[in-house]
Length: 176
Image (tube, rainbow, N blue to C red; front, side, top):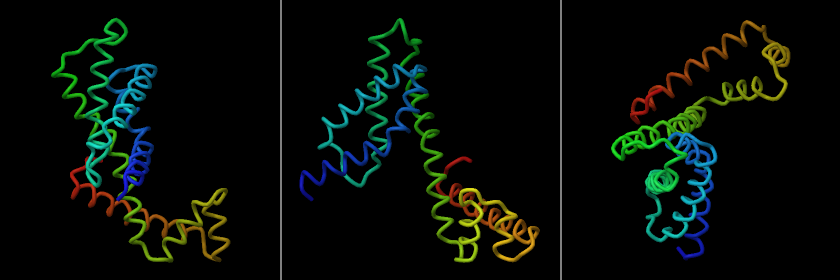
């Protein structure tokens, strides 16, 4: 892979985790302004150290380590504006925040995997029901079925999705 392709992939990876990194930093710093400043610093460091990142490893975890160091540095430089906690506490908080921020992303990934396991009929029913402006009644009318039948089918599909997501989360060690 060329250096240019590597750089493009890094840019995509940086872009894909901005929201999660901001939430992580907000949890560490407790201030939107400081979190945004730390995020910008993190992005700069990630870019400068991009050659150190090994492609196909956990980018978010790598970026979180950099973000943690940037938050600690910013906390030291702005000690009057940021509550001062011990480095041990910040390290523990950092690990918990990293896991918490990743959970919604993992659950979303589990949902996509579980949706792919549904048969075409069930997937079509979900697509129809969750289309803009659709109601269970409008879907029932379009399918020429009773509203009760559509509700029952949706409940069955939702239960299957919940069971599938729960199973995948348990296998992956993610708490729901």
